[in-house]
Image (cartoon, rainbow, N blue to C red; front, side, top):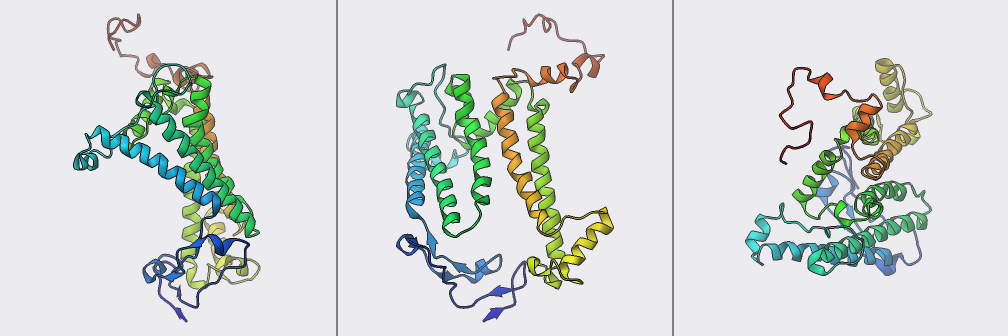
Length: 326
């Protein structure tokens, strides 16, 4: 029986349990549910489960738990095993990578904990990717989601693995911890001459903002035409006078051109995927090919020199000779 109440769709379906299509091994590894939650039904489908983990899922969970425990106990040790101090300083605790050159395995208290935490976290993430890929294949779906996730893994590996390997030092990788990681993000930009002049950073921002904009345009169009049944996109593409036609007409009226209700998903998919791909390329080039992105921008005419920007600025004494104290 259907209830016509929901926060977004105004329709909350509550029928018999949606039984899954038969997939070998699914029941053996299934867990959680099926249950119904009216609260979740306000924002999506009210049915919870039955979920599936499989070997890849359990491997991801085990390695991820080990990694989080390594980080957590190191953070707790920094708080002298005081639970209140541990919770209060959660944003500032850090687990630093080994210092100095060399990629060999270090003693635990000299960066070894960071190496083991990073290793187990990487294995966990890769196992989760394999879980998504194999589940899509088992259901006969395309593997688009797994490759989109792979683009995010690419950026993750460029920052924490590939670039430190190329640079020959784990010190180039970010520490674990919330604020220390954010500080690393700001610091690497300053150390290498400002990431704003990194063209791949620029492209990454363009694709990030572009995917957000496209999502907003598509989601807004669907919601604006929901009263005409816009959620039934595939059924309405070829029909006239439908929500799909009204949405397309709206964009032709306002912008002169419109994506169709199939191509808009491809636009968003590729904009989202290219965000971490270009970001990862920009990270890999930093310190390996380009030491200072500002000077690189000046060389290629992308950035003005400081005397051109501030002609009346008098440099402090010793600045040109590089004798200022840090």
